[in-house]
Amino acid sequence: MTAPIRFPRFFVTSPAPCPYLPGRSERKVFTELRTENADELNEALGRIGFRRSQTVAYRPSCLDCQACVSVRVAAQEFTPSSSQKRLMKRNSDIVTTECRPWATPEQYELLQKYLAVRHPGGGMTQMEESDFADMVEHTPVSSYVIEYREPGVGSQPGRLIGACLTDEQGDGLSMIYSFYDPEHEDRSGLGTFIILDHMRRAAARGLPYVYLGYWVEGAERMQYKVRFRPLERLTRGGWERISDEEHGRLIAAATAPRSRDADGGRKPTDGRPQKDALPAAYDLVG
Image (cartoon, rainbow, N blue to C red; front, side):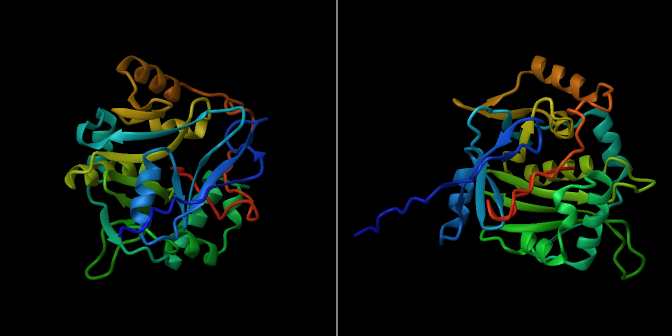
C-alpha cells in the first residue's frame, strides 16, 4: 500500500515595511523544506514563484500589491548583447570553481565589503560570520557556492572577487545570493559577469532556465534583471515570455539616467525579514 502524500503546511508572516517600494507593506507565505523530498518540493515551489532561504521556501503574499514578479531567463536561447560579450571577454581569465556549500572567512570578508558599499545601513550589514554560515550551509537541497577568483600564482589560488550561492534544480539554476568586490579597479560589471556565467553553466548542462528571483518594476536596484533576454515572468496564468517590444522598453527604462530620488528617495535595503517573522530570507542583489 502506498503511503499517503503529505502536503506541506504553509504559514504567513505579519505585515512589515516593504523593502522595495516606499509606503507599502509586505507579507510572505512560507513553508519548511525539512522533508526527505526537499529537492522535489523546492523545485515544485520554485516553479510557482517561491524562493529558498536556508530550510524555508517563501514567496510574497501581500494583500494589496502584486509588484514582486518572479523572473527567469531561458538559458538555452540566451544570446549575450554586445556589451555582455565584451564583459565576458574582458574577464575571461577569471577562475571559477564550484564548491560545496561551506562558508569561509574569505567569503564572509568579501560579503561585508560588498554590503558596506552597495547596501549601507541595510539589515544584512549586521550579519555576523555565524549568520553567514547559516545562510550558506543550512540547505536541505542540492546547492553549491561558485567562487570567482583572479588568476593565481603557482599553486596559490588568486584573490576571491565574487561568489554565488546557487541551487541546482531539475529545470535550471536558481541564484540564491551573489556578492562581489564592488570597488575592483579593473573589473567593473562583476555582478553581470556572475549571471552570465550561470547562463553558460545552465546551457552546458542542458538546463532550460536561470532563476533570478523577484523583479519589481520601478524599484531601481532590481532593474538589472531585465537586461537578460529572453526573459519570462510568472503570471496568474503561468510563465509567459516578455515580448521583444516590451523588453526593449524595460531595458531603455533600466538604462536611463536616474535622479537621486528615482527609487522613492530611500536608501536601498536588503529585504531581510525580522527574526521573529521568518528565518533569514535574502533575495538576489547584484
